[in-house]
Image (tube, rainbow, N blue to C red):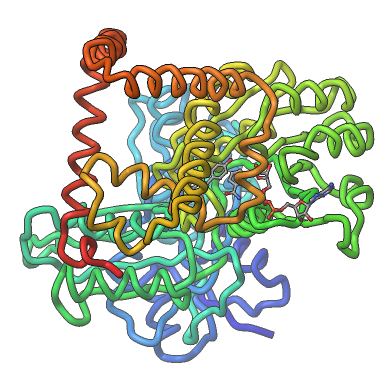
Length: 565
Ligand SMILES: NC(=O)C1=CN([C@@H]2O[C@H](COP(=O)(O)OP(=O)(O)OC[C@H]3O[C@@H](n4cnc5c(N)ncnc54)[C@H](O)[C@@H]3O)[C@@H](O)[C@H]2O)C=CC1
Ligand SMILES: O=C(O)C(=O)Cc1ccc(O)cc1
């Protein structure tokens, strides 16, 4: 049986939270948080449980400083408890009109402030530590007109008359569990860190947060406080991930050594299974297709606490069995077999489930999904414009085609992309396919054709870097990128159907036309074509893309990059 120290009395929120954490725990009760922590430090109990956040009050300030100063103390878990508060009167003859003083614990009065302002604007508020002793003393004096706000259970125990139930809505408190040893990785963790009081330094807060952002670590909570003695800033953050993970260790080490530049500037309060104060509707995602992109998404969804199942043609669990079990079915197979796969498995998806198509071609695949699935199935298309080598989706483009059947599950998946920093563009199916002609199909075709051309002329590849201009280098880089990756992915892209085809076809015609003019030395005609092209390119487009190009030039001209072998 574990022992837990927390705030009393025996029916308090803290007591209930301790019992929720472990119904068999032996609970030791105190009146104030410092007493709870002192008992834990003396080793009288294995755990301490203290309130850290309330949806009405915000953070419970006291804990912040106190646990930062404790050594051998790890925040290892959390309990979230809905708090139900009621109003009672000490005297049976009292009602709403005769109450002139409201008694309650400090935190309870803060949580009830909206209710008190609306209903007891003129009443005196009396904050107490020991409610039972106060009630006994008021009773002894025979005073009338006293109301108490507390849980209904405690009001009954103190034999008060119940006047109002549930006086504060949406009232939930988060409690921290403290222990002497750290919690192991659960796979869905958060880490809480506080800084020492910091010396002034321009951009310190932005630089600290930047180290997390650069590594794709989401920030869940942020508070700053001025140290009472020195008035220097202390920063508290809660971020996603466990303290033992590589990216977290790197982020924390860099913050200490390069940003704050002081050893011991950070105190890790603990890592613990993540707490969801927000509502999630999806429990599980199942993938059809067990390739790189499925694995990439499944890992990141699992890190968000979702259950994930990957199935394919040779997996132990079949796609049919998986569809029975999950909320959202993700189809993630090569583009050329996406529609066929949807037609095969779509009819098995039940109303209330969702089908999300992860692919590079939209019109055909959505049409297949709308045809093959029941009308109560949500359908959405998502094209992530990054490959499985990407570490994070931060600042990368995602094109989404919603249908009239995209509902709350689809929105939750979109919220997941948004949370991780993806730039989301809502398209219709034709527009997606047309723009992928420009953004993907054509550049891939050019890259592959360039590769073929170099091959057929036996060009020495060691001459390419030294003989490219700033402008021509981009095409070479695109060719290298494409040929660095899975050929099948790019073959699929070149072979997609849909609106993108017309872009490639007209490009080919234009190449032939230009080549002929060039062969004939028609410089005037070629210049005119360029002038005409430029006349339809908005100057804002030319300016901003040129700015990007120059930024790339700058990076490429750095010594280590320029001469990179
Ligand atoms: N790899 C990339 O860079 C990106 C890929 N995508 C899209 O993601 C989807 C999946 O791509 P990856 O995971 O990269 O491909 P992959 O080749 O790594 O995986 C494809 C999976 O589909 C399975 N598969 C192949 N033929 C099948 C068939 N006839 N029936 C059922 N399953 C079959 C394969 O066994 C494999 O498990 C594609 O639609 C692709 O366009 C989107 C953005 C980037
Ligand atoms: O990483 C790159 O350069 C890619 O081109 C990745 C990629 C491959 C296929 C897609 O449908 C979208 C993006």
